[in-house]
Amino acid sequence: MHEAILARSFSKHEKRKLGVWAFLSSLLIGLVFCALLKAYSMGPLPALNLQLSRSIDFKVLSIMDASSYHKARDPPSRFQIVEASNYYPKAREHSNSSLKSVDVIQPKNFEPLLAPIQCNFSQPRSDFCEINGDVRLQGNSSTIFIISASKSGTDVAKPEESSWSVRPYARKIDRSVMSKIREFSLKSSAPSGKQSIARCTKNHTAAGVVFSIGGYAGNHFHDFTDVIIPLYITSRQYKGNVEFLIANIKPYWLAKYSVLLKALSKYDIINIDQDREIHCFPSMIVGLKAHKELSIDPSRSFPNRDSYSMRNFTQFLRSAYWLKRNTAISLKDRHKRKPRLLIISRKMSRALMNEDELAAEARRVGYDVVVADARGELGKFARMVNSFDVMMGVHGAGLANSVFLPEKAVLIQVVPLGLEGLSKYDFELPAKDMNLRYLEYKISAKESSLTEKYPSDHPALREPSSFNKGWDAFKAVYLDGQNVSLDVSRFRTTLLKAIEFLHHN
Ligand SMILES: *[C@@H]1O[C@H](CO)[C@@H](O)[C@H](O)[C@H]1NC(C)=O
Ligand SMILES: *[C@@H]1O[C@H](CO)[C@@H](O)[C@H](O)[C@H]1NC(C)=O
Ligand SMILES: *[C@@H]1O[C@H](CO)[C@@H](O)[C@H](O)[C@H]1NC(C)=O
Ligand SMILES: *[C@@H]1O[C@H](CO)[C@@H](O)[C@H](O)[C@H]1NC(C)=O
Ligand SMILES: *[C@@H]1O[C@H](CO)[C@@H](O)[C@H](O)[C@H]1NC(C)=O
Ligand SMILES: *[C@@H]1O[C@H](CO)[C@@H](O)[C@H](O)[C@H]1NC(C)=O
Image 1 (spheres, helix red, strand yellow):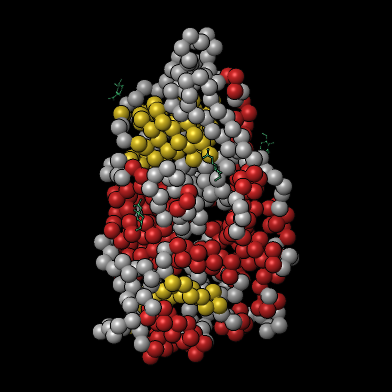
Image 2 (spheres, helix red, strand yellow):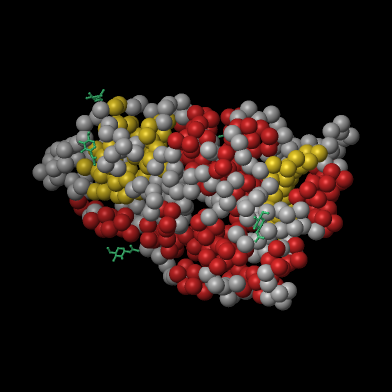
């Protein structure tokens, strides 16, 4: 059953990415997706950055305006601008409930917490809270109790009970997918407070990490960018001494990624969907930290500890799946074998119509060629991908298998009409972070099946970036309604360029 899942095409994710694309294009051309942009082009946004930290005598509540975060980056790259302006309106929407609960808290009502809580609701990709101290989770009521204590001698004034809510899935911008993610409420209260404290039925000694695998589970790209990489960022620091409390469980998903889950945690998974236990932990992270699409920003991972990069992540994958090759072939010295090229096949949309012809041309150029669609048991597929030096495919979830390539291998992304922006953020930038060589083949209008649908001077062909009929129409035309047939002699240049890269390895 989970075979079918690997290659499943993009869906809503691309909707979000279209926003990135649209904003970019609008910077350049100024007339793209007016409807989308209207929603996105708001002024400074009151996204919240709430920090409660423990101290014997006082607590700190700092509310930081998202716009100051934005300005603080100096100089902001275009990606950061794009990311920020796309994310913040939604970030604000999601911190609405948080805003409400935070409004309730007045610093004068604070009592020292036994458990210091640090939440960040102003990160663009996800909300998360880190709790150190007595923390108790009850799955069936989606509640996390954080036990705080009254300062000695002031028992009369009971601390205000405070609460936050977190949907622990790293695609905060995507309204529709987030609505499917279970929301957890975090309640901080005094042991002597009105609310009786849940009694532990299971005591744990390791740290707990709470996350959801709902959302786009099953889409290979999303599994990595929304869950696996954020989970790595969040939990690798514990070196296995961490328990995963998972919501919106899908058994096939756990089976598919069991090797990685086991490599990150030496404990069994705790399914908290229906669970009636009260799990008590000495510390917990609710939600996953996430930096960027299919990648990691080393400067943001554990500033005070070892930092992790995307290369550390791919190294981790190679070790978890026993992948043999760390580095692609070097053609510098005369080699016995030919460089190996994997052509990722797509069948439903964005199909490569002349796959066989391309494979034949690649063989003439000197490659050992395999055409495959990304199916089958993940470990087996990972080992297969790792045996290649060059991987090519049309923009789509199958290219997320690039995480299994050896370093310095070449990723060739075929970019259909209209998909330049998506292609860059989903695969080009990640490939560079993985220390892969990246090549792009942008098709010309005549290589697109859209030529059969539109006259040659139609704006859909000549200027896809001016296409402004909304997301659904865009998706129907460029993502679902387009196949490609490459000009073999033009593509030959890209095949030769990849070989040249391998000569420099
Ligand atoms: C945010 O909360 C306010 C006040 O409760 C409400 O009026 C508003 O509609 C909410 N916004 C969203 C986007 O849910
Ligand atoms: C919360 O996230 C923002 C944005 O990444 C960051 O600037 C800020 O330092 C974080 N706050 C805390 C308390 O970690
Ligand atoms: C968990 O630990 C607490 C405090 O030490 C103890 O009172 C409780 O009985 C323990 N619960 C279980 C199920 O072991
Ligand atoms: C959760 O389980 C506990 C213990 O069995 C039960 O008392 C409680 O009513 C349940 N809560 C919900 C919301 O089902
Ligand atoms: C990440 O990889 C680098 C380079 O291989 C290595 O020096 C570093 O120790 C790794 N970081 C961690 C936390 O393992
Ligand atoms: C693209 O190719 C697939 C498989 O050959 C076919 O089923 C589909 O109808 C084609 N789509 C378009 C828009 O030509």
